[in-house]
Image (cartoon, rainbow, N blue to C red; front, side):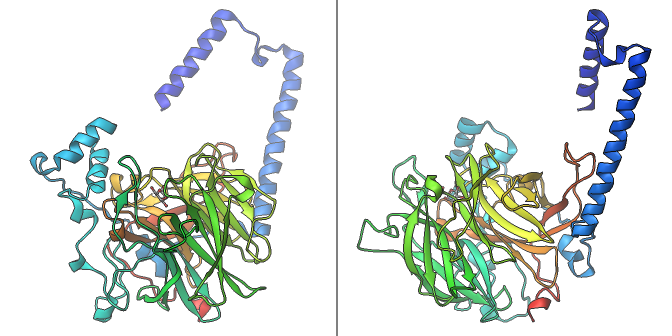
Amino acid sequence: MPAAVSVVSRGRSKMRNTQRKPSILNFDAGCGSSLSFIVIGLVGFTLIACLFFISHQVKTGHAHSYSSHLPATRELEQVEEEHFRLPPPHKVNPRAVKRTVKRRGSTKASKIIDEYLDGSSALHDMFFPSETTAVNPTKGRNDSMYFYPGRVWLDTDGNAIQAHGGGILYDQNTATYYWYGENKDGPTYQIHPEGAQRIDIIGVSCYSSKDLWSWTHEGIVLPGERTNITHDLHISKVLERPKVIYNDRTRQYVMWMHIDDGNYTKASVGVAVSRSPTGPFSYLYSFRPHGFDSRDMTIFKDDDGMAYLFYATRGNTELHVSPLTADYLNVTSAIRRILVRRFREAPAVFKLRGTYYMITSRCSGWAPNPALAHATHKIMGPWETLGNPCVGGNHFLRLTTFLSQSTFVLPLPGLPGTFIFMADRWNPSDLCDSRYVWLPLSIGGLADEALDYSFGFPSWSRVSIYWHRKWRLPEGWRKSYA
Ligand code: GAL
């Protein structure tokens, strides 16, 4: 990079010398003194602007230089490395190799992704460890309360948790966490050979927990529809990424989800409500927000009770954000386009000390890709992009978001600045066996690089998702809910 810069600047000075183009640097003495005024004026203005910026940050409490290294979270922020040992070429799946060469050339990363996507690959167990290693709360708490990203995770009945593309609600009324997600406990198939792998709608599952580690199945709180083929929830359709928030005024639990047909052309949002966090939820309707197509989506409830819908739209080229009506059953007419032409999806929104953050993925179907973190002081935007938040593991894991795709970010009330990043490790050859990747996410310290237009002052704290093969929540994570 520096070499390229110096070549360009050499080229420019040569052009000035040979063509003798007028330049402000060639002004005569009289102009020189006005130039000094301009320069002094500009320097003065910049200094005043910087002082104003700093005092504003202190006043509004948006100073970003706080430390994230609380003793309790130090362990979560350890950088752990991971090494893959690829099998010798004759053991690698020939089908996967053929596909790699055809589609993407044969870089090491794309070879591994093809192995990952291929259910018959010799490496399959590396990405989807066998059930013998399952995280099992029914076996007592000895090796306990550890999260193992990518392993099978059993509920308190000993069944694999089915809550994909999900999100978590902390319910003040019952002091309980509820995890809602897609129940994909069925056979994977394709409608046509080039179509995406799919599973018929089974419904939205709900699990409850006090500790975020042992989860009790509360049942399917919004089931698929078996008979009426025109119904949005008919088993032949698509129900993805359900999220639930509580409306304090109407005392209703409101679920929003992505509703689609088997070919992903309906591209709508669906809304359902319940009086209880464990359902049953009554399905109300689906619609295209503001008339726009809507695919991956999420909802976010702010501290002031306002809630917002974020949806990937215009053929997944951009996201839209819109406030919900006071009852959370619709969008208001306000709408902003964000991350335009960035092709981002799978949004997960969270907030710390007046700043909103979001993790997104690129659009690559079930295949993993690099996550990006974004931030803003105003939820309606503009949003700025911070970069890839993944830390540790290895280069390949960081380029694939640890082989997963974002779905939700959960704050830990006792550890401000520390969150759980929730993601799905999709298994396209057997979607029912998709796994969960939960990792500590922290916001703290200064970003790696200053943004171009921030006068050299880094504007945002760094968002980091730390890779761990095994980790658990530190003491005190639920302090303020106690
Ligand atoms: C992804 C999306 C998933 C699912 C999948 C289907 O892009 O994030 O939720 O829709 O495509 O291929």
